[in-house]
Image (tube, rainbow, N blue to C red; front, side, top):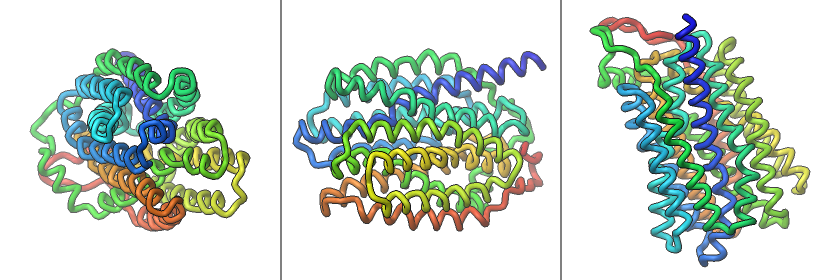
Length: 402
């Protein structure tokens, strides 16, 4: 038992470090929108399109990365993802054309993120810990991603001001190489095969015929739309309204700081209350916070208040969403099924970040996208209310661990 506990703790710690680093680097990308667009003569649509491709490929590759991690363990997936991530940052720092930006920030980093973030790591953690502790463990790892955002954003801004955007990205690439040794140590234990295992095809059919699975996917689309639009375009939105770029960086850092508490608390609550009902309230609160931010007079103080409030709700959806997948379908194919749900998150991310840049270049403001974020939040709250968290009943194979 002590050996199992030590193994579970090691997976939890290493997984948290991987997510801290991967998400911490990613959340600084919004700070590069204005300086890169201005120096290279791009409209904001070029930068936004590259990050939209990043989020799309991240989502498209996630189920495949998850399936490999389910079958062979997370270590090799994280190592390969970390290598692609570091190369993407390197070439992003050397990019001078729209194509170079799309291939580096979009393709390479998007593929790298699919191997180094939540679906792969949470799958490893979900298999390593006891079922009754799973929701809280996922909350801890999700909080680690928020800590990375809080801890690394000031450093990213410092590198940007000290070195300029190109050298700052090269320095971030060097930091990204730390994912390789961390990933190599993340040796989780995939569930041993047995005659009672559910084949991959049947697991996919089971999820495809489960109404709650699709409701979860649609709800996570909204999450991606909201958080990536805000994460990438909020600094530019504040800058356009006469607020210093340092304020935008601080707001993103506040989101990361307060989301540490938000994800931990929701992970704890998810082990005691209905996860789907908690998600409904989270999305409804998000819609309310965005509405208040838009109707209140804009100032550094209101921006900071928005960062604090959104931080409490930011990645709090992640442990609850993955917890529902584990509760309903078990952990054998958790990374893969979680990856499919995450694909919808990234489709939403693509729409949020691309639509923000496209409409900004077309209309000169973000008004339409802000209103869409509010309406989608209300819709997601309604969708999650009807999700049934009861574990599926199987006849051919043993019932999945719930």
